[in-house]
Image (cartoon, rainbow, N blue to C red; front, top):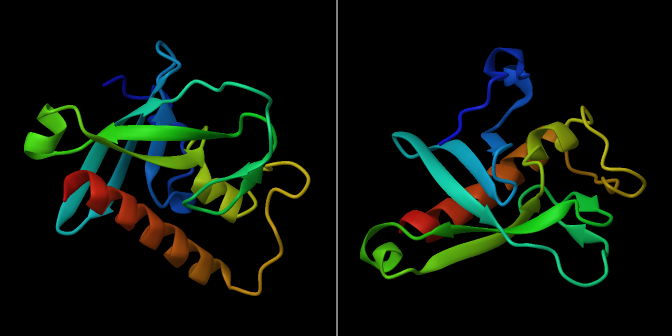
Amino acid sequence: MAVPKDLAERPWEDLDFLGWRDPASPDRAYLVAESGDGFVGLALRRATHTGQPRRSMCSLCLTTHSGTGVSLMTARKAGPEGRQGNSVGSYICDDLACSLYLRGKKDAGPGGRLHESLTLDAQVERTMTNLAGFLAKVTG
C-alpha cells in the first residue's frame, strides 16, 4: 500500500475517513475508516471510464460530478469469497474527498452539492451509514 506522503498536511478535523489514490497506479485507491471496534482498510480498484463523460453521483456523500468525478470502485470481498475473486463495487468520488465536499472545503463545480434541509451532522451521518453499508458488503 502506497501511503500518502502528505499525511501531516491532511485536514484531519474535516475527514470522516481517509481515502487516497495511488499516484504510481491510477487505477488503485485506498480507504481507511473506523468500523466496529477498530479500523478497516480497503484496497480499491477504479474502473476505467468508457463512453461519453456524464454527470454522476457518489453513492456515499451524494455529491454529483460532471465528467469523470465519480468512478466505480471495487474491493475484493474478505475471506473465501474474496479468494475466489468475488468483489463489491460502489460509485464513489474519484478523489475520495467526500468529507471535504460535504463541508464545502472542496468544490465539485456547479450543481455538485444540491441544497438540502439536512444539517451537516445529518449529512455526515448519512455518508458514514452509506460507507458502513459498503464496508459490511466487503467484510461480511
